[in-house]
Length: 141
Image (tube, rainbow, N blue to C red; front, side, top):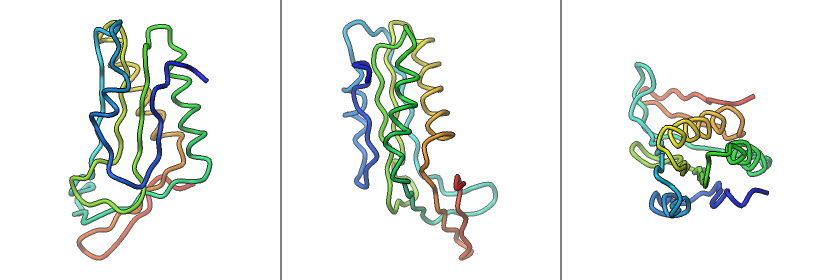
C-alpha cells in the first residue's frame, strides 16, 4: 500500500469536498487538481430526476488498485478519491478525486487518469430515473 494514498472511500453519506482537498495538500505540492462529479439534470435528451449508485463488494479493492496505479507515478505526491452510493438527487456530489504534484500539468494528468480509471474499472453502477418514468442502468457488466 502506498503512503501517497491519503483517502479512499466508498460511502452512502454526503461527500466532503474539503476533506478530499485537505487529504492531498502537501508542502511539496505546487498543484492540486480536483474533480467533483455531480448528478446532472439530463442524460442526452432525457431529463433525469434522480439516480442511485450501487457498489459491488469488490469496489473498495478495485478503487485501491486504481489509486495505487496513479500513486506509482514518480510525480504524484498524494492521491484521494471518494465515491457516493445510495440515492442522489440532481446537483448532489457523486464523486470527488484529487491529486497533488509538484507541477500543475502532472497534477491535471494524474487526476484525469484517476477519474477515468475509477469510472472504467471500479464496479459502481448507476441507476438513472427519468422524468418520463423510464429508467436505465449504466456501467453494469
